[in-house]
Figure 1 (cartoon, protein in one colour):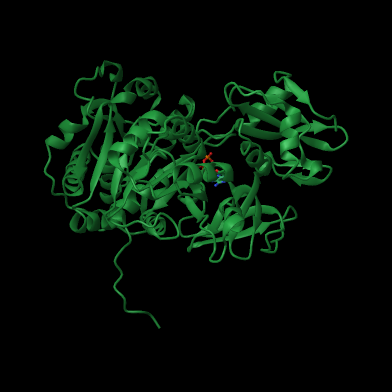
Figure 2: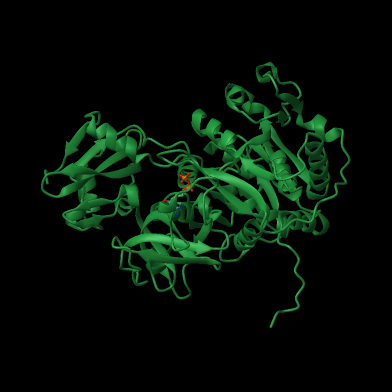
Length: 548
Ligand code: ADP
């Protein structure tokens, strides 16, 4: 028997239509050098129509890729809405990738048009001659009008001011009826080895993911919310916060390029967001700023979503207990749109039990299936004990990479995440490592993530990264590289003793390095490859607390 329900396609166009018709009273507020600028959603929708007309005039009439090289701001939101709704594919370019990666990505996706923020013209101009398919560049943002654009003069490429393109057009646009399974957007993972890989999101996957982000188990959004995505719209879709907010009429407050703790806190004071999302490093910096500035006011925030790498409980506790900021950990990847789990503790979990759950990577969201697969390829019990690689499936999980065969990443229709950990009977994921970072000592796994979390709970430790180093007897032993607070005078032996309270003695690091900062990848995650290499090359000054 088939149902007789109406089949309205789940498209970004539907999000645009709904937000525009029903929530025209929402607004997007963008941070500027000396204050803020804002646009009501009603006006925004008119500009979205103008942008679509402008892009059509530049030859975008099917599923061509339109790139963005932008911060989180009004114009980027306009691109997020206009490009997929007109049937083209929004391709967010990560401005922080290495130049050769951006070149590869733009050429691989065959971007035709790129929208560039005026403040990013300089790095973009260096890349432009390497792009093979780009025909038009639109320079956006309040500084565009006065900017020197001579560096963008490249044969075969026309440069336009974004505002001029919009000003020449009507706001009415004949939005096409699209198939919800058509491509809406794409994003490349940075890939620590080999070329970046493209993930293509469908309208349907973006729509369903946005609904899941708006749920109470996630951001729990209403029109009373003001959402501040600190996580960039150029990497992993700002965790779906932009579409989710627009769809339910929550306002957006956009940090633009002001992402350092001090201007960010000032923007929070001015724009009064209720919900935010960003990686642990950002909130670690914000915490340091709040600790040092008693007068700073972040009381508007009711919830901060945090993820992208493991979120130490010590960070969550400090923000909550000292500054009243409630944080939830989320897990996901570019391949999973990205949000796949959130760490809201189960009913009845109180006190330390609740903190235990908040230290996990969270419970699978509705729509996402998960399983743990052991080294021998067998599915492990979901008992919170059996360790293996996490595999996921679901409506917003990719089943392949764009024009790139990578059978190793998929098994029987499941995405192999490359993350290692456990899954408990309630669907909570606990990650112990990325597969490529696991430490195996005497045949037993030592979790670098557990050691890092435990170390970061020490008051003198700002950051810690643990990697495995070769050992004759045990094959591998943990090396802890630690960044300490300015002026702190703490020794390796003291840190080891501190860890001994919460970590089994055979897991305690024997090798320690005090470093000025943890090396990071182009997307800001700990770059353990670099640490391992520094050690191998003898460039780390290592203090052995005990030779294993
Ligand atoms: P890239 O692969 O380009 O670095 P992604 O943002 O797709 O970028 O990275 C996804 C990876 O980030 C996950 O596979 C996981 O290893 C890590 N990650 C994301 N969220 C968490 C979290 N809450 N805890 C631990 N690791 C996380």
